[in-house]
Length: 401
Image (cartoon, rainbow, N blue to C red; front, top):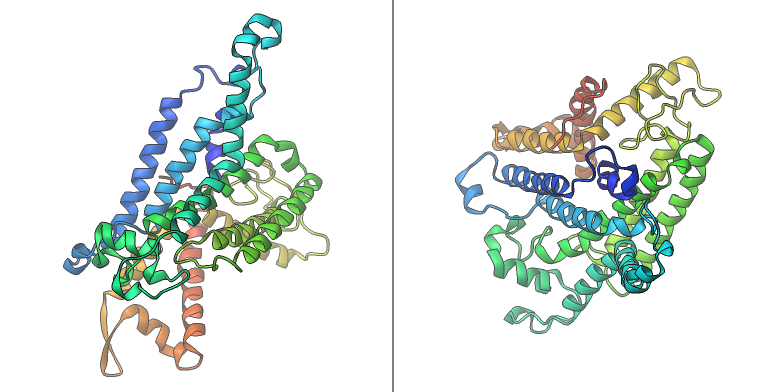
């Protein structure tokens, strides 16, 4: 979603560009720099705290590594194809004023624009998903243990064969035969990033639909309907292609896109749709990343909300927005904190455990099921540690890469 917001110049005609014009090279360098930094940060988190066993079995993939790759691919798609959404005249004299020129270059230019637009708006995800389906279901794993396997089995999939053949089992997550952020599944993961690009483009191109409370609520209905349709389509596709996150199947991608689109719509409704009370001081933003109606604060609070409840809701809202402003910072911080605590040994009931696991066990696992204790422990960390840090950033701090 942030791609078209940060590079909105590619959705404006040349006449509307600021002095100095549109510097594509500058954007290319910025995109490459950010993709490399994301990959480098992910690699750093994967090898931290630099123990020999971690260095010897370094993962070449990971959450941030994948994010860097799909960000690079989708950003390049955007800056090379966004021009096709501009008006045909590009803010200058149209070819209609020059019939001879129109006869010479009109058809190729129109056809090129149409092809670029089709690829940007739908061809790219179809190509990614189509390549994954064709490659996955025409592949037969030559490993002896996979001779009798039929259907989509993770350990005998194309993903397992590629990941194990390229860098070996020792560099896969948990030493499995495939890596959940492996090469083949990244092809479909790019579709999720593309879906965010489409929502971001809609925000940039259709600002009037996000400028008033009534318009926002109408847009929310459309986004929820779109998200529901995507999730339903993923469920239907799941009858043929299993919904699986580890292999990032096309059916999983559709379900995830649907959930996230509807989820964004609900956040938009809460903050910019005036269902959540806004702070009284100026300069605040609404839905994380978009700003209250694209940078304009929507004052007021829902009817019937008392002063104490309103102040509490404002506090929660400000904290969520601060977290949304700095997602990479909090993600990297959480990985560093948990990894560090996992490597600090303590004796617990006669056996050696880590500070992190003992924290969940003391007073939690003894009185509730393990999964619930884990969730409660993580929630406590969110509220007592990360939410506290987010409060320090409420004033508008952005920690960017």
